[in-house]
Image 1: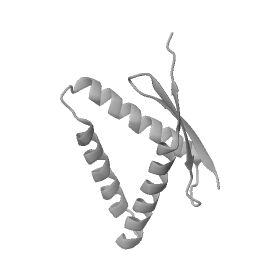
Image 2 (image 1 turned 90 degrees about the vertical axis):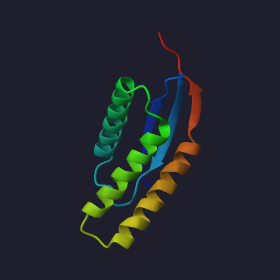
Image 3 (image 1 turned 60 degrees about the horizontal axis):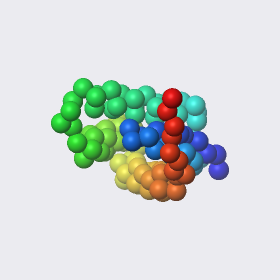
Amino acid sequence: MEYLLFTTITDSGISYEIEFPLHHQTSSADAVSVLTSRILNTISDYVAEIKDLKDGDILQALSMVCAIRSRMINVDPNLTEQIMIDLFNQNYGAVLQAKEKIASRA
């Protein structure tokens, strides 16, 4: 299985090194990494502008986007639903197992 190593730093200075197992049909790990980074950066930029936005609002919007994208694919909805569930569980498991470090800032 191929993995994507992804590192993120929270606003509180905690760094997570996450090893995401990639789906066997992933065509470009680089594209997945870039798109993930862009989505996270867009969210961070928006959150900086809108002070009353809550984490639950962000999670709700992301789940809505995932649901919409899964229906934009010309595949049986039951299949895409199961893929989304499997991918979420796999990726959430990777996040829970991520190595946590205190990030230093200069």
